[in-house]
Length: 246
Image 1: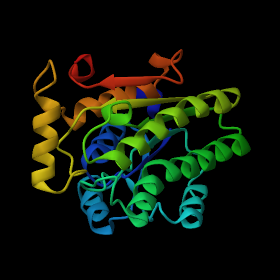
Image 2: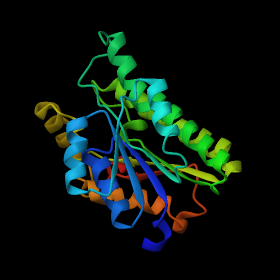
Image 3: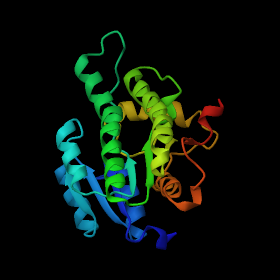
Image 4: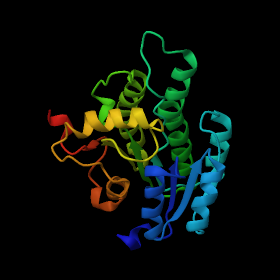
């Protein structure tokens, strides 16, 4: 598989830490040219220190135009991983405010539309021969969870977007899939009390009762980006330790 990605250009959003960092490292090991996009300049600098070959881009995905310009500037991208996401903290529907909704939907859904369309436009205009998109969804995209409604809704929207992208981008030789991971210790949930609550409720209902490692999810992303999954598109691949069987 290593030869397959040599010379290919990979973009990972939210690539500075957590699952994004694991994905960046996985592709970098395979000889790809990897671009890590994130709003956290300090975290990107740390990543650059350990992986000098990785190209870093500081941009806020909530800024549509700045994001589009940044992605246009590195075209063509052969393999895109829409990893950036926010949990948004514990919240109740009865008092969730507009800013929280805009932030969660803006990062988890709207930015995926923006980055994906820009990448596909670049592939088409450069005659790069097609590529892949992997969207990082969640086990909660189809499973409501108390006090996380906006996060669940944003990931549910992402699941449908994945299918729509697969249909529309297919004629451009672009395959699109998503993965639905269970809880990981990645920093997405920054509040230790909230993280423990999620861990207890998800992990305790998994058949395989352990925390998912970011490296395990990253391996799945690489597989879905490779020719080994050439006949897979529009799918949501669950990696949840059996949680959804309950």
